[in-house]
Length: 322
Image 1 (cartoon, one colour):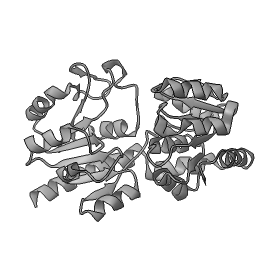
Image 2 (spheres, rainbow, N blue to C red):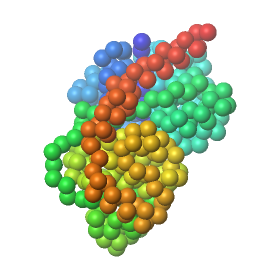
Image 3 (cartoon, rainbow, N blue to C red):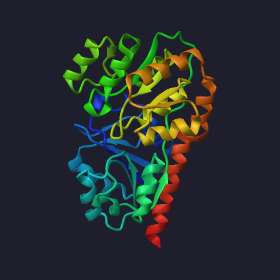
Image 4 (cartoon, rainbow, N blue to C red):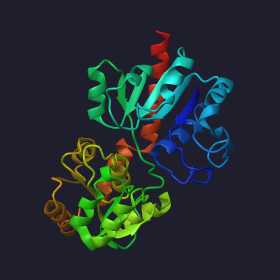
C-alpha cells in the first residue's frame, strides 16, 4: 500500500523532528510495512534519512506535485477539519481514498464529507461523527519507547506541559499549585508567562521530548487544567506512559475518558482547592506506576496507533472501491 501522510505541523525545518510524539512514531512504523511518504509544511524540501528515506519536508504549494509524483493509494491527513487544503485536496483528488487523523476541534464542518474514514482519539468524537453518518474509528497513541518510566528523584509536586495559550487554562494550575508546580511550553502569550511567575510557579520554555520525559518522571503528578476546548490528551498518555498519574478536570470529557478507563489518576472539578487536595492525596497514597505504563502499552502505544492507521487506510480503500 502506498500512503501519502500529510502532517499539519508548520514549524521550521530544524525543529521538525524535535517532536517525537505518537503520530510520528506510528507513521515511522508504517514505513516498515508500506511505501510511505511524509509531507509537512516548512520552508523548503528536505530529506531526513534518520527518520525515513521517503520523508519529505515540503511547502504547501508543492503538495500536489509531490502527491502526483508518488501516486499513492490513499491520503492520510492529520489536523482539524478547518484546514484550508482539505478542500483543494478533495477537489483535486476526488477518486483517491482519504483518511483524517482528527486533531480535535468542531466536528460539524463540511470537510467531514471529504474523508472516507476519520480516526479519532476519543469516543466522544466517534459518537459525534457516527451520528451524522461519517465512518469513524478510534486510534491514538504515544511513543512508549521514548516516554517511559525512569528511576529519577522527584523534584516537583505537579507538572503541566502546555503551550501558554488561554484555552489551556494555565492560570488555574498556577493558582492551585503555586511554587509546587512546573509549567513547560511555548510562550505564546507573554501575559500568561508573567501571571505564572507572579503566582510563584516554575516556568520552562518548550523542551525536546527526551527532556520532557525526564520532567514527567521527576514530578509526582501531572495536572491538566485545560477545559473542554483545551486538548492535552497527548499529555495524559505521555504522563501515564512514564508512570506519573494524571489529574484532569471534570469538564474535559476527552481527557476524562483516559483517566476513567485506566483508573490511573483523578477527575476533579476545576477548583483550586480540589486540585491541591487531589495532588496531596496522590502524593500520600501513591499509585503503582506500572498500572499507568501497562494501560498505555496495552491500548495506546505507537504500535496500537500504527495498526489503527493501517486499518483505517485499508477501510478507506475498500469503501472507495465499493
